[in-house]
Length: 380
Ligand SMILES: [Zn+2]
Image (cartoon, rainbow, N blue to C red; front, side, top):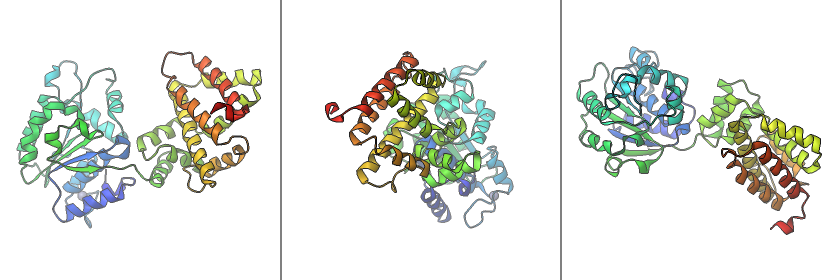
């Protein structure tokens, strides 16, 4: 990953460029942010820049021998540590990240926005307990004690640093008294899960959500989507590229139409239509259904905001969705919207429990009917 190719996070990239150009990059950095906000990609971009032999205006050139290795994640002076699980013949306490490097590289090539579950799925270990163990810490200490092979720096990236737990104490000395050519980049999404002793010795960089516009552009470049579809997804993702890519991949982009259809069928309450509609929703996977109901919640919240503001300009919705709002506002007022929101928010939590999805959908349809046809005053 080249820093300049990373979608968005302009202020973080500018900060890295500045401190690298002024030669005052902190030796220990703790990047805190959701995986979907891109801390790992930013760390990879920074490492590539640090190792580049011929940077142009403090950006990695992307073509020198160092960049070529960094981009394939095989640079000998960029080390990775991440949570792993027991491997076939190796004892768990001896298993370290180096045993998983080929899988790690293909994980990074696929995308750098994945979370721990994505990683464990990638290595077929979703049911196993992962961590960063003592042997890993010893390996980190050893790696950083060596001379650099060819780079200017020894860079150690520790991904999902939450997994270090108390073993992190073993790295204290390293973080406290680093050799001048050592850069340690730790990445986590939950800073309180990092030992205080470590946290206080790191420069903490908070990674904010990615701009909607950058998410939209990234989706357009990587998926075949209508513009209205990528617009819909970018707002729904709330700055989280992992979520955006997941939604785009599943390409479930008829959500707003589906939502309207549900309201229409529920309102009319024609038994035949409702049965067909229920079967249609039951045919979806649980994840799909959760995404759809999550979308409906997002829409209802924006809709309510629109009713309060009496305008739609500031809503995180696409033009098509704003047209949907115009259709809805004669029928669904603020109180009804609040009741619908409550209904969806309650039921989205039931999908994963072992309830019958069919009964869940049917009950929701009856409740939607009641809300839409109600004199709302009696509900509140
Ligand atoms: Zn280069």
